[in-house]
Length: 179
Image (cartoon, rainbow, N blue to C red; front, side, top):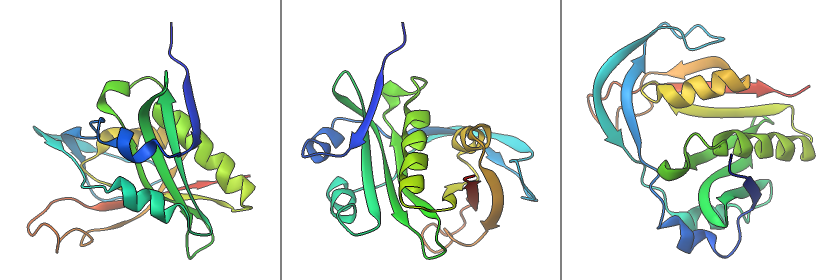
């Protein structure tokens, strides 16, 4: 029996529930250039390691209060299972500022439910589509976006170079055009 994922605007529980989640993920491969799109292209295996992003749930909640922004929480049986933070980008698209799924809730449809809600939000805002950025070493996420219908439309080899000198991470930009 599959679990039911509910996605609603983040409420007062979000910040405290966030600390009980594990949003880290395993890196096992990296996408290889050239990044011509519309799909990911070739990948190569890497020695597996865990990665987590330093995200402040209070900053997410505060940013969602700005005009043209939103924060949605996915829950399974009332427990926080993931979130997606959105804003209206300078180019008129909805932008996914952050998305994460709790490790214990992966493969339960949480990411799909969150992106479905982002699509609804973008349509409610009258926006032509959604853009997001992920890293070349987050192949699982890239494959998910590709299956969902996003198109790989660009990359930036230097975006992370000042944060982590010598990094091999390349920023990949994905777009989903709405009809």
